[in-house]
Image 1 (cartoon, rainbow, N blue to C red):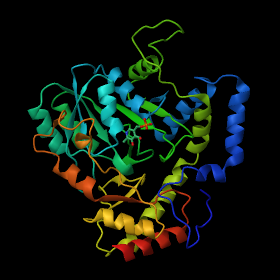
Image 2: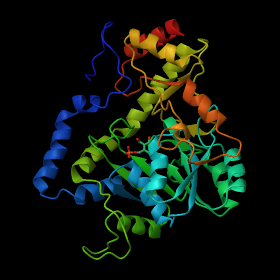
Image 3: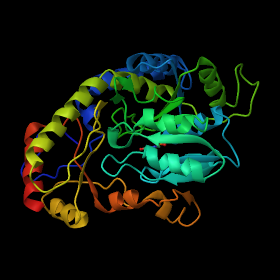
Image 4: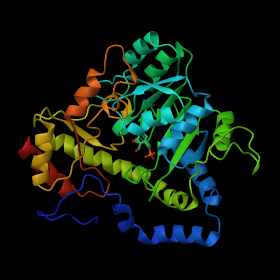
Length: 377
Ligand SMILES: Cc1ncc(COP(=O)(O)O)c(C=O)c1O
């Protein structure tokens, strides 16, 4: 995708992971060249430097690179001692990866409903689920679309049962709640660097951050066969390493994260202003939250018709996510769910629509989208 202004006839994509490459080719090539010349391709200087810079930039005690965001959750669960037979509460309105990771760790997902307007784990629903279901050993709050879940209230519910909160920050790099970084409020935070994320690699990548240094040491061991010294496994671990090429690219992209998030907020404000009074439900925001707009999600009762009309206008949109996890073929009928049901999750899946959102979008492109959406509602 070029960062030129698309002409009136050109399609506008919903996301544009190539745009950074188009703007920063020389710096990306220099970073890759540095790695290729170094002769170290796994767990070398680039990964250590990126871990340090990521922790410093976002304010974490420490950070441990992983192969992807799904593994980051598996590592977090294993570091907390969650495994076969344990239950883990999370949401159904998320990327299937959050739930898949719980099963990969050998645990049993318990799916809880969301706050209907903000789309993140509902603390009241969590409280009633923790009362009703025995054996829940951890909670995963997902900061969906780049908007912080209400971690303080979730923590309060979890504290009554003495269980830790993990934050899935795959969509919330740089988001904050009451001035605290997402990922730094609970016991452990996990990140994905899938190419379309606010901080995205040119391949797979992930990160785990933790409050305690003991936990960081354990995560470091778990990601490479439980070793401290090479070839000596102290605890059973796995192979989930971030590679040097992705780390070098991510170091460069990290230096653009804040400006990218600021640009996303400007685009979101333009959408807010342009679509006010259009009859669409626009994104709600929690007081005290800094939303980083991984997605700008509108809501419409006839979402599918709106999506196809926008397609005819050359506007790319996406649905995150059309089928809640508890209704997916792989999971339907076999997962435990919130005793009050998952009504808010099911309604969101029917109505949400993600408009184009990436920092390289021009004001003219945003104006063209606003105009097309207003005519299509
Ligand atoms: C909320 C959420 N959790 C987990 C993941 C998994 O990340 P990955 O694709 O890097 O394994 C993603 C990204 O796809 C995500 O959006």
